Length: 280
Image 1 (cartoon, rainbow, N blue to C red):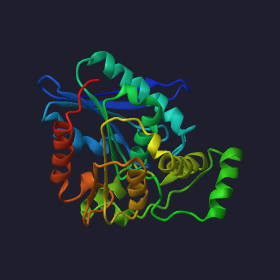
Image 2 (cartoon, rainbow, N blue to C red; image 1 turned 135 degrees about the vertical axis):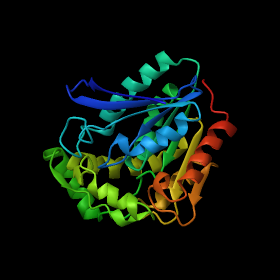
Image 3 (cartoon, helix red, strand yellow; image 1 turned 180 degrees about the vertical axis):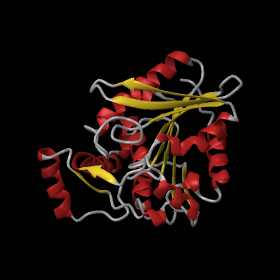
Image 4 (cartoon, helix red, strand yellow; image 1 turned 120 degrees about the vertical axis):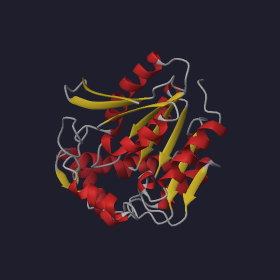
């Protein structure tokens, strides 16, 4: 496996950190990872290595305000601005690998971003895997707080608040939680703008699920996820009539970091193969 890192300067003149894990042999496909709130792309190195061993090239970037990328911690202008950054990298992948499929794999806020991306940009990719998407927060704020945040995000969009994620719900593996807490690139911030986007876009995605493009789509969620509500995923699946929605019994939020992570990887790999996700 060959691992490369670098920076790309966005339209906002922010340095966006990215990394690529390439297999030693010819790539069968590309998997583009969108990480979650407060974390960063390096937390998916083990996911990338697993797929690289099976001849899949994996690429990811640190969202603005996350990891090694520039920006106020936990802030970006909008989901659309993040999509524009993703489009830069995905466009490069399309140019470099015109004959193999490109699959977005998003987790948590990244899972929500992946679904949101699909509504307008599905023609750039060949499949979407949305893992534990944050369509409905596990502990959603009251209607008053939501209304207030809608006002504040317009007035003070960059103002940061604690994301209050219940970290004991990340994984049933305590080492994952300990490593998360010790990781200097992890933070617990979310801006008023992104917090509002998470809630409002999540509601919009669910309400418009029946308009989601006909593209290979796999949804998955842990039955005991407390960081995001499984009901948000199930509501989207019902509204879209998604047949490929996997609820992992007894699993927590970070499915790829559960003790049975190998089962998760195998499930994703089998879906790609059995669904025959191909270049369109």
